[in-house]
Amino acid sequence: MPSPLFYIFAAIMLIGGTMVVFMRNPVSSALSMVLSFLGLAALFVGLDAYLIGILQILVYAGAIMVLFIFIIMLLDLKAEENTSFRPAALAAGIVIPLMLVFQLTGVINNQDSLRDIPALELEQAATNFDKNTMIHKRLKDGRLPDTHLLGKKLYTDYNFPLQMVAVLLLVATIGCVSLSRKNSK
Amino acid sequence: MPFDSLPTPTLNEYLMISGLLFAIGLAGVIIRRNIIVIFMCLEMMLAAASLTLVAFSRFHTVDGLPDYDGQMLVFFVITVAAAEVAVGLAIIVSLYRARQTIQTDELTSLRG
Image (cartoon, rainbow over all chains, first blue to last red; front, side):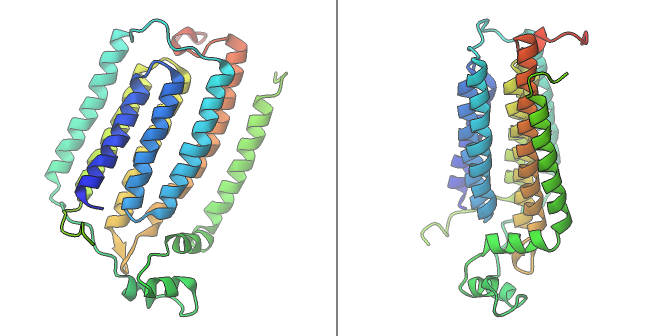
């Protein structure tokens, strides 16, 4: 991804993030969050992570933020009436992240690994895969079969974590049901 | 390609941007009192960490391909975050039913 595009999408992401923090109305915060995640998904696509970018839009901007907006509207939250933030919290909330940013800037400026993005060698990578597979064909054509490669890794190297995540989702479902029952005492 | 002559961002720029997003999320967690907005800012910090992982995955090529271990971790982070949001929002709804408020400075039963 060329640098100007990178800066545009990074600016969209950071402006969206800032609006989440400083919008009074929770619905505006949630919609700014969608904006921020759209910029982030564009950055993912620029890093050749097409599946992760799409998942970011589908799962975060689609499902999770809709759930947030649904809950905000269900609870009928108004914009905060007293428009001033507490001064102590505001000061701490600006100083502590600024310290983090300064520290990070110091570390990053001391790293001389200011290297350019390494080129992908698709044709050469194709030789590592079986000739009959879709991955091989796509790589030969000079395209990156991102989803195929991730799926292959998911069902071979990461099979056990995948099953653990399945159990986790089941537990989360049961937890939600038992939390939202009427007499959960 | 007409844009090939333009420079591309370096790894440090990606790390800086994701650090900034993380700092904004941290600021939101400290400043805001609405527990739903705090929760959204937590999600933003998770997303910033994901950007770091994807950037490292792309800048560390293995056999000419991106290192997909990093993207796998992002995949699991997204899954766990979805489960976490579902449970967290269920807790917030039952909290609201019990107390009629979701402002953190009005929830002082533990004298915090």
